[in-house]
Image 1 (cartoon, rainbow, N blue to C red):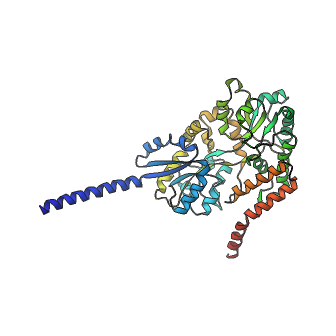
Image 2 (image 1 turned 90 degrees about the horizontal axis):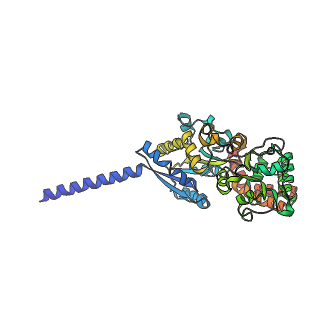
Image 3 (image 1 turned 90 degrees about the vertical axis):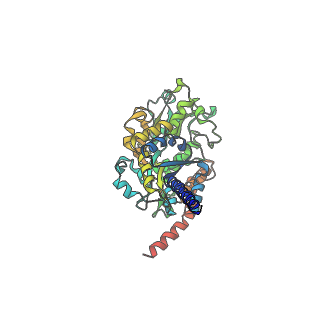
Length: 425
C-alpha cells in the first residue's frame, strides 16, 4: 500500500513538474511588445506571419493610448515592469536612454543581415543616437510638409507650389480673403511643429553650447518667428487653435484654406473625407525654405529593447522582421505610416502614389531636434510664447528673449550635471 501510494505521489510530482516546466517555457517564449496608439492595430496584423516564421516565439501585444503612453513607460521603468520591446517616439529616446532603461543596439546592427544603416534617411537614423550610442531602430517616419489646393493656386495665377518663402508669401496673399473668412493657411497656434519646421530651416542651431542654453535670440530663429507671426498679422492665417479649427479636412475641401501643414497620415484622411470629384484638386509639396527648398522635422517612432528584458535576442528578431522593406510596405498599406528606409519606397503603393512623392523628397531634407530629455518641455514653452507674439502681446525680440529664458531655466539641471561631470575628468 505504502509503495503504491509513493508511486502515485511520485507520478503526481512528475506531472506537476512537467506542467510547471511547460508554463515556464510558455513564459520564456512570450515576447511582450508595447505599441502606442493606432500602430498597435496595424502591427497586430503583421505578427501572425512573424510567429509562423518563428514558431518558438509568441508575441503579447499591448496597445497604449497616446495620451497615457509617456507616463506608463516612466512608471514601468521605475517599477521594473518594462516590456521586452516597445515603440518609442524618437524625441523620447534621449529621456529613456538617460534613465539607462534601453539597450544599445549598434553591435546588433553591425552583424545584422537585414538592417543596413546606409539605407535609412540619415537624419531619421540620427534621432536614435544619443551621445554617440545607438538606442533604437527607426520604425516609421513623420515629417511635416504642405498639403495644398492645386485649383486655388491655379485660379490665383500659380501653376506650381511655392519654392521659397518669398513665393509662398505671394501665394498666401493671393489666396487670402479675410473679409470672407478665407485664409491662405491653417497654422493652429497650439501646435509647435509648424514654427519648429521654419526654425529648423535656419543655419543657427536652436540650442547652443552643447545644448546647455537656448539659442532663440539668434538671427535665424527670429527670422523664422517673424515669418510665422507675420502670417497671422497679414491675416493669411486665422489665430485659432486646432480645437477652434473644427474639421480641417472639410474646411480645406471648402476652400477655407489653400495650405495646410501636416503629416503623412493625412494623405489617407483627405482621400477618405473629400469627395471623388475633389481628389485632383489637392496635392502635396515639400516645405519651401527662406531661399529655396527647405528642411522639416525628423519625427517618427523607433523600436527599442529594454535592458531588463530576458528575451533580447527574440526582441531583435522581431525588430529585424518589422524592418524588412516588404513588411514596411505592408505596414504603410495598413496604416499610412511611411517607412524610414529608402529601399522600402522602391515598390508598392509608395512608389506609384504621386501624393507620397513629396514626402520622399522631404525626407532627404529633414533635421533632428536636440537629443536631450528636456526637449519636449522646451518646444512646448516655445509655442506658448509664440502664441503670445501672434496675439500681439510680445514683440519678436521680447518673445525670443522669453523663450530663451524659459529654455535656460529648463536646462539648468543639465548644465549642473555636465559641469560636474566635466570637473571630475
